[in-house]
View (cartoon, one colour):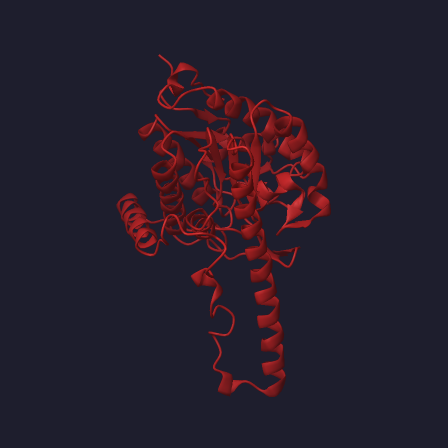
Length: 354
């Protein structure tokens, strides 16, 4: 008897270890690599469960109306995030000028983010209005999902230009229609807001929604507390999607390895999130599925107990190159195609492991 969920897994023994993280901050179309601090102590299983429950409640309590439109309103996290740490009276005139420049830069990034979001809302509305067909497959997420468009925060981005060709080869020429809706720098909270504010289809429900989100939530200390909160947030996204699109398959894509080597600081957190996503798929086999393509980014053999994250596949230790995205696409497209042609509830007919 095949497994009742589509838990396609290509994670190997390497994902049973911890790994070294580097956090990349997305600002005005540039990637700035920064060092991160040591991981905090792991919390116990019971505390982790409590963190999931509490974070889910917090997300639910601050959720926007589900059918709100993306053309109005500003996300709450945009306000007061630059100047809050310093009292204006304590600033010198030079520091005031620097703070003004920082705020202008901050808001320019916010403006670009909102432009991308509104563009996606318009694309969704236009597809439904044109012929009523909408999209068969939607890909939501962060910069890794935005790579499929060849852009970073909505602007053409050189390192991603060849990824757009991979998209054209694997997804743009299929009988089913697909649209990538990633925004660089997004965390789970941003994606949830986007879905609540116009990026979900209304009249034509897709057959499949694929999600890759969470790597930007797992930075800095990369604690298991942050992993629990990230997993809870992704499950809240799943809950919203299933509530609004009950006949749509939801395919959760695992958080990829990142950094120069594996194991290191963030892998415990990454593994915890991926484990929770896999368990969620097992618990909800009628509509939720899981796929992990991370193993292909690791070297074949460890050196000193650590695997290299292949530079050719992930040059900046976070974003897959076109070659890396081709590895993902070659395994992802058959999964998507199978789900497109499988009614909700019948996934066990072709479920397998990878």
